[in-house]
Amino acid sequence: MSEPSPAVSRAFVLAAGLGKRMRPVTATVPKPLVEVAGKTLLDHALDRIAEAGIGTAVVNVHYLADLIEGHLARRTGAPDTRVSDERAALLETGGGIRKALPVLGAAPFVVLNSDSFWLEGPTSNLRRLVDAWDGARMDGLLLVAPTATSLGYEGAGDFVMDPDGRLERRGEREVAPFIYAGVAILDPALFTGTPEGAFSLNLLFDRAIATGRLFGMRLDGQWLHVGTPEAIRAAEERVKASARTP
Image (tube, rainbow, N blue to C red; front, top):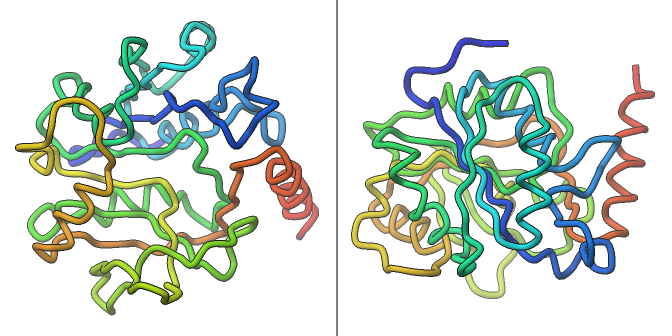
């Protein structure tokens, strides 16, 4: 495993959501503990954090929180995990991270959706993202996947990207070539002046776009959407197929 990067040494895993689209599977199991290819989505995320050399991960909990906390307590090895408790109120993506800022610290950190799942290329995409971070010109760096080749995704995409990697939102009634893959590096300064309580990370993405400081890095591999029970089965078939490919 790589040594922790001096620039990015902490990660936040978004694991508090209700997983409504995954029902009935998530009636008794929180979505982060749903298994894909023999491993929970949460463990896929944490293992990739460890592979990228990031030593500490904060995991937020709300829905079926006891099950996630128990799973983390049984987990061994890197990264060191800490829990951010949102049992009292679900804070959405931005609010959940804001609550954990005292633990995350003043340096840039990685954010992962617990259901972010992809087939790797030759090297770790999260390691590539960390290596590409440039705080002098970036407030946010997003891992983005090609809309056309992402398995199980049927939307119109999220972003267009210029040759320097700078991101803009897709226009209304347009199709964008890239989708947000659920992984980003953020400067905590982006959270200055954000509201108390629940809010979306999209607020911060739009702030960074307005100042020309939101960038993207293209995923090397294939992003797999795992938002429904059917999508999990499709993702597992794709994982098996990739394992059979020389």
